[in-house]
Length: 265
Image (tube, rainbow, N blue to C red):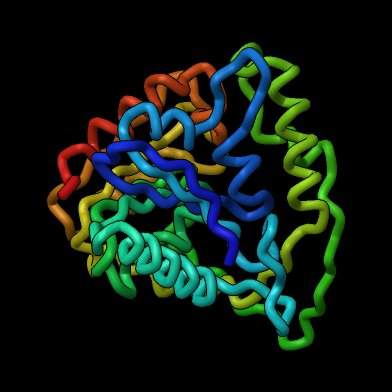
């Protein structure tokens, strides 16, 4: 597994970022644009956190495994292994877990399985309707290894003026360099096992006001069913599915930091 790291010195806490369905850790969480501050990893280092971003199997610098497939259970297992590695590397401190888009459901599944190394869970761009069952994969499903496209890489930026064209172009370039081929998933029905009533870890839900992938109805079902009493739900005004790369970035980082600061050892 490839894990990207940027450390604060001294660090008041640790955070692991988990990317979404299509693009990997570096373009998502460490976007470098000349003259602009857009990297979420850099932003959290400035807040005193050592930051890590994982490339799950088939993404970025991590190769596919021998099956060629990614599954929710494998993603959750890999997240837990990386969390444990980070914790051990940092004197067994617990780690704040952050999942974006499909990474939000992978992170939820991981937290449900074993929260031993997790200080808190933040989900952003949460997409799953807990009342709709995801169907099983067809028995004859085949690997596709489709090429990612410029159009898709730019598709999350939907609020006019919220991000510069230079930043969009840089993101697209980085995304296609790191992830030229779309990762193949199967058994996505494993996400049906997510049960918020089993999660006792503190949870922060971040929602972009204009995020078409994560509408209020889906956030509400998750929020109300979480067992933990220590939970918050923050709507990022003016934000969409990529709010932490856009104009609301400062408020996004403030909202995240304000929640997780309370749980540092």
